[in-house]
Image (cartoon, rainbow, N blue to C red; front, side):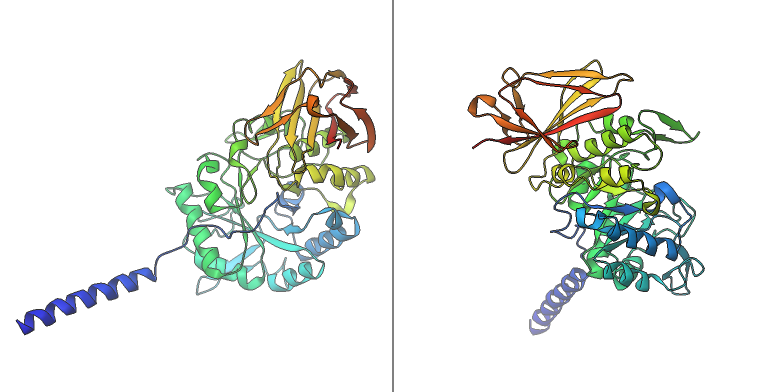
Length: 412
């Protein structure tokens, strides 16, 4: 009996040890909380430079981010996209391209941080990145530790060369790796919306791409044969039905900005306004060193940025469409409303909006724009001038491929 009792105890202890040992391998597959409480703002290298990046360029961009007023307007991330990679060493750790980044990523991160900015990097869930560089598949925990040691603050994680992988599982692995490394890093899910990341992404990442790549035209599709990229309006149309998934710390990402990359000024203004209205990350993709005053004016319009960065975190919605003239509304934290009239026509369109007769209700935020409860003062966010009150009908001409953007401020 004594031997039997001892045997039973040994089995129980063994089981307890196994459970304890197993717990050491339990992973936290969730993102860092408390990050990206408003849509991230910054710059990314891909739209303008693709693989043609180096240490000197990134340092110059960081300096102009400060001198142009963009940092003071809220932009903080300097994100290196694809092709910064060199080889892995004998232990599997990734190193930057020694010719393009001779000082190393830690030095570059320190430089960016010294400017009051944050640094982002790019990797891929597959064996190779979209540009053919080493991906993170099988090296997730090593790469996350490396990024943390370098001082990285943001990771854009792409989806090329991922044969056989399931998106949710692959992104959870990287989320767990980042958590294990210990440095709070924003995880940008770049899966192109194929596996509906808005359904599983909120627990795993801070933002997720909803579409394929953007292209610098107002309303077109660029056919590359095996894949397509989309103009600004094409991307905007693909956001329908997604606003309920967005909020503080979890954002729909319609891809980076093309402001300053070749469209007309009015089209850039419309692009920036709509990204603000739908609470999209504001990640510039142009050459900051060669900006016109018009481009700077668009990217640093603090009143439009305030709509995007509103702490309520509610994505705007399309209220009506008539003859390609769209009316959008976005509820704001202080009881104000942002309103945007978007003209997709090739000719000017007239707005005649009767606030007293229109019942604007948002079931998501449970906010109503009820002029009967008190009128609002109207401010035009691009002319930066008062435009009367909602006591009278609002009339304006919206130029082709342009917007009239307003903020309605409740009169107390």
